[in-house]
Length: 225
Image (cartoon, rainbow, N blue to C red; front, side, top):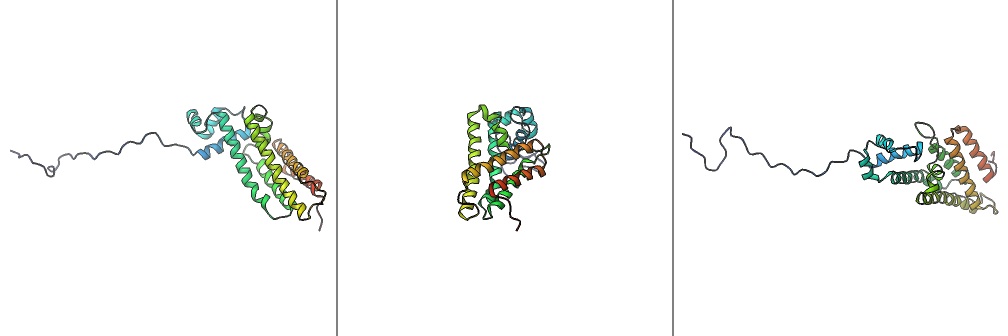
């Protein structure tokens, strides 16, 4: 007859009591990186614009279904706005050091225009141009909030160029009669022109020739010395 044990360790071979399981975590971890997904959305919007980019396109590019897109970024318009803000931040970062540099005004402008061409001519499926210029001619026409963002971007560029020309005037690189505000608008207009032409598949050589001509108008012909 087997005597029952009182307390102590269970007899050899008897099943052990399972350890308490860890509490289950609520929800599922995100299977995407928001910053990467936003970059994918930006690429699509820059390529086709707002109207031609469908939610299905965005879902396929980001790897997120519609509910996930809405949860992360809001509706399509909000995603467009966030994409445009991302574009402006990236463009600003690419140009900031050049605008603040101590180089001559011609060297500064040459680097700024070269960097702009790098941005405008990029794209796996062809040159994408300038997202600000594209938005100005499309969504900004009917949407006051987007229009205000575009106007702010245009004004910011004018001010950055004006700073360059004012400093050049102070250092004697430009004549006393030079108007930094007017020159800044000409420089911005050149930026917009090469952006449109880049989108229309003008070659880099053609665009660089436009830039050189514009610099000669704004600063005078480059010295051969």
